[in-house]
Length: 391
Image 1 (cartoon, rainbow, N blue to C red):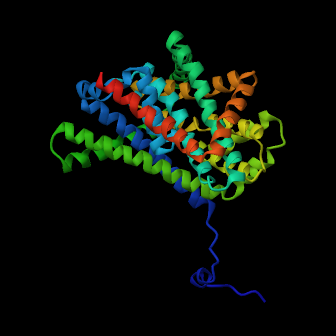
Image 2 (image 1 turned 90 degrees about the vertical axis):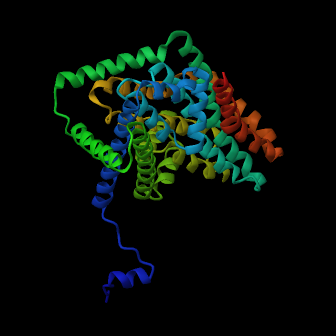
Image 3 (image 1 turned 30 degrees about the horizontal axis):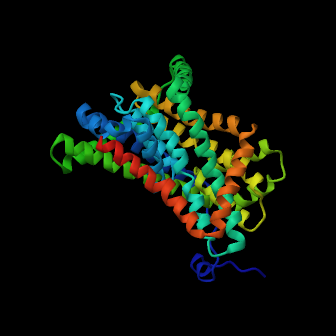
């Protein structure tokens, strides 16, 4: 006859009480709201700092290559393009527009490169396993090289024609027009404003001086954004549990378009392309997934991670909402353009050959792999920033 255990007794026997789904949904909702409060708070703090302070802070980013380097380095350090692009949305949408769209675009492109460092670092964990390291490293590096190739094509095109800026501007105008015509009330925006005003008042009670107060508000809200996003990723990953590998492995033998869509969906579910791509590395190391199968899932993960910037755009003040939507649209359009330009064209074969060409020396001499990561994600971006900062 079955017996019922007291909760404490169940815990002592290693039985965890089943978590109620509605609690997880409530936690996700609270974290999302706090995330939006942080985004709005950063925007308001930048507005309060004034034009002179903000222009001095963003001066180096005016150069597109320095902006690209900032995006790469910041994302490599945080290991999350969702976090860095969300902060870009906050800066673009600040009243007074301290970070113009044309300066923000290279940062978003750089964030796409920087986010690939996580799966590459996971691959380096296999450095002592000679048979597995080559497969793991090639799976990770294909993500790096895809984004480097896409940026190498689209950044010069953007500088020459302004294609992403113009196209995203049309998208933002269309979305803004629909929102204006609907004339629906925005209770979320009103509640965000109340929360930010309360935070500003709390900070103002702790420190004296307008400038210091706004710097502290910006720092506090940045911590809120990064903290909430990190917790949100952990909660969503826990909710999905061990299903991530199941979803990914079941799609391997499907049409590449289906596999790509699975990559999008899984990444939206966990709000992190780094998690999706990092799951692929152990599968590749074990020989369960080939390099050709890795690529469409990786591209889907790139596209899926753009959802976070779109969510962050919700927090933009009404007068700058168009700018927030526009930079979020840039993130989406860049990834879509990269997929169209690379995957169905001869560039896909070039990408695979580049991956194998880099994997071969790295497999023979592991120092090559470590040197590659250090140079691409940290040393070169930092050097570019220092050079343009000194000018």
